[in-house]
Image (cartoon, rainbow, N blue to C red; front, side, top):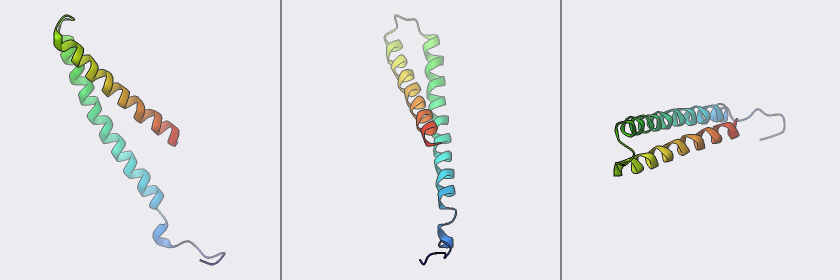
Length: 79
């Protein structure tokens, strides 16, 4: 490409398309994490603290919440 020539038209819009794909991916992943968090919360609420499954559900909830926080930090750093 010579100085002053416009960029290849096929390149225009690629960054926007990638941002849109990332946004869709982020949205889909956050929806899946919301389902995991919601079910974990419902099940934890039904169990007594001495139920052996309580600790496992609590760990599932913590992991999903940490993943959601990681997505949010990545998004904030990318903006």
